[in-house]
Length: 375
Image (tube, rainbow, N blue to C red; front, side):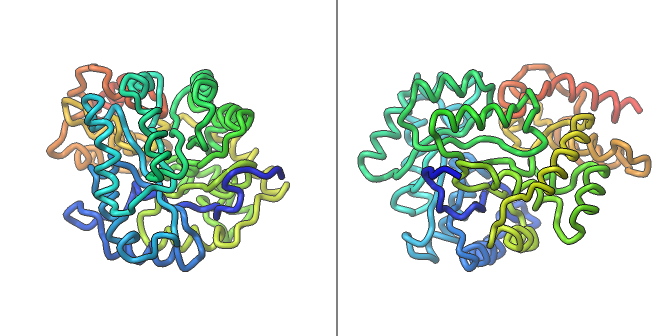
């Protein structure tokens, strides 16, 4: 295996997007501290947050659970600047960087990303001169390494890496379900990044939790191959086994998930040839899966004028598939209490433009309205 930037970084990163919550909806800081301690005790060091995660509460949690409790040199911290959420002009976009420094108290960021570049927003980063801005912060020592996270087609990735050859790394959605999925193109994007000599941080290795609890056929296949290993372990190890990977982010939401991840990633071993063959069979099964490929990132809901809980509705639809005993109407009613219903969609298109998975949200949400409201 060739040498590359980040080769020696532990291959499990702690994604702070889906932290544990209390009953009041606030982040459970005490449980987050326990998870940080478990992660650090295992010799792992990479933490990933963003200005927009939990409306800034994720960065504050990073300060409380990590920065205030551990020596700065003992961990690495990544955060992100989003030009299309939480920013209205160049000044407010650049202010995100300084606000992130204040929220985290980290002093500097080891890794910094221009956040979630897609066809519908990437020009904002040029318009607001953000590429030059992050390079200026790097020159000042406030950023060690910079790059961008990406949710679009391979052609745009090729264009961005050609136009910005000095980025240190890229963050890509890579999982075995999307390896050949034309809507995500994990394999092709991976190959483009490596052809440009860029190291990769992997996001969505379990596809927003979908591969932690996959369709029954895949679950049965993985269980038969290794009854002691969780379904999530197959997905994370698949991504971590690729060449050029700095780390694989896992958005762990409780101490049990942390313990499970540590059980196979503390002393990571790449997938064997036999295990790779199992993954190939799982991919074949998933090629015929008609579930809605939502990862519950909630980018679609932040600007929804009708306050429709789109990911929650899609989750109900997916759980109903092939399960006659699942009480879908009841679950749908709970998911939409005090919020918009699927039929409230006014087809503004905001959700389609925001979706990193390129889901035809309007068509899907209309189908859910028919399924749950006209049953």
